[in-house]
Image (cartoon, rainbow, N blue to C red; front, side, top):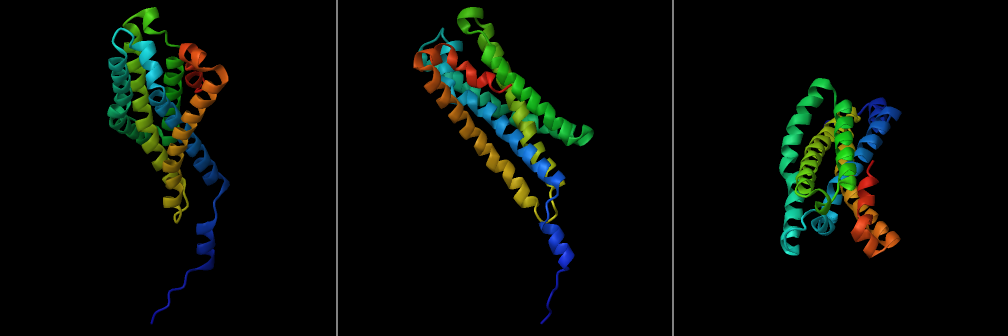
Length: 206
């Protein structure tokens, strides 16, 4: 019977996480939380968005339009992955990662200040859908880029563990969006939330 021995230094090295590796993991995980917070927030407030931007149709049709706008972000996600994945190969994943966060954050913030249909007419839903498409591109690029970036900076025997945090923190963004909506509703009341308070979680993205 052959007994395989593992060098002690190699075994220790595989278990040690450097400060740089920890920083990459934390930054990428937080970036993923905020990206998915922005992305899911739109869906969490679809009912209110329908009342603000699709008011010229009946409430049911307006809600369907709002949900279709929400789904538009999912439709363009693969394109975002292709565009920003290639960009990451050429200019670096860290800078591409920052670009996707900037695009997502600004798009979400602009939804928060976007005038309603009653103020600017058909331009409101057109701009809203355009911003949603930008969100989809951003999250498509961020998610894949974050996984690759973390894998490239993970210790050789901890790549699976490191990249699993990106999947876990995506769920954290979903939970954070629900908590933000709930906290705002409780703080300002239902009437104010329907009128203007729904904008606060979007503005908080900045």
